[in-house]
Length: 169
Ligand code: AMP
Image 1: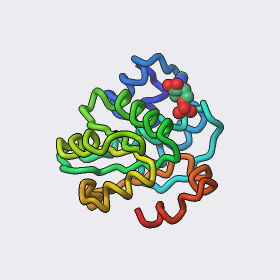
Image 2: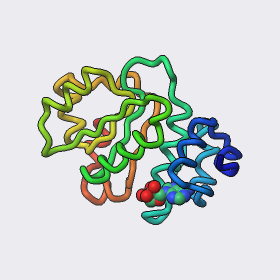
Image 3: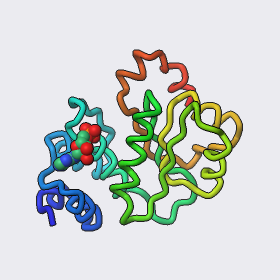
């Protein structure tokens, strides 16, 4: 077991999950962000690509999620479909021990498969702003139960002109 991850306050299943992935020590952004998020703080994190930012927010989110909640409780906005897929895969990977249901929604993919997954029940939705708005407006995506919101690569989303969509969401 990875002692340093446990010392950040993560529960044993999540420590085991990162240990199984071969992570030995938390990265600097993980060491800073994980305890703050576990305590329920709002956090702005900045770090280079490849420094473990995704796990820094996904691990505490997984720990803080309510186990008997019905409906979407976590929403992650991402600027591109590639990033949305990457974050969803990471959440699935880190959360496999907790049976968390994760869905990536993005433009260019058929609505029907995304809508049928939403109907089956999803805990974490990761999406690009345009497709999220479409699904909300169509009544297929209910965000009324969301308690955690992440703006991943927020600077990128702003420079791509997503501010209006983000505010609307
Ligand atoms: P990211 O910056 O979130 O895109 O992560 C970059 C890569 O680092 C991913 O392949 C992660 O699986 C990996 N990673 C994240 N945290 C750690 C860690 N504490 N130790 C080793 N690898 C990690």
